[in-house]
Image (tube, rainbow, N blue to C red; front, top):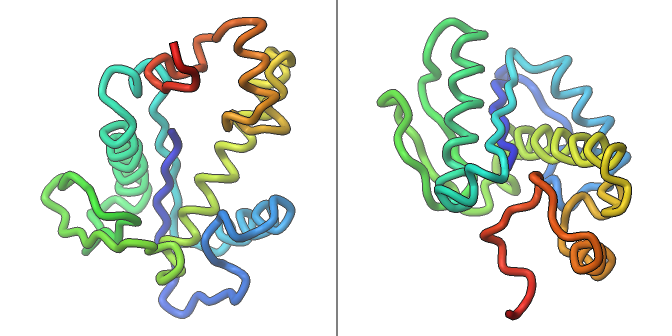
Length: 171
């Protein structure tokens, strides 16, 4: 799981930035570069499949967010005043005030920007993983359980990059 944190300048605006799932891959890549270049700071946090299996996807998502907050805090050398969190669950990090916002990536440009960075980073990670594991066609399906991906798992089994706790198949 990949999470991102972004601090944008006060006057930053871009009409194309929205929920990453509503933007084409090509446009996300362009926007990702704009966000990285024009933000005050940005950071990525990652939690690998093995740890997701141990602590579950929600806790892993929160942990990835914590990693990205830790990285961005180091970059700006101070704590943010408040964290805007996409969704309805979060565990406080370093006593920094936070606000959970359902569908926040559709309401706040900073959350949408973080969503774009996280999705772009994850997609690129899947493309890179696909170079060493071409049987799973990760550059195309990005690890989502498409019919083709499920078929590859049935034929070749799973790798260390697959979540073992994710129930794709009936027994």
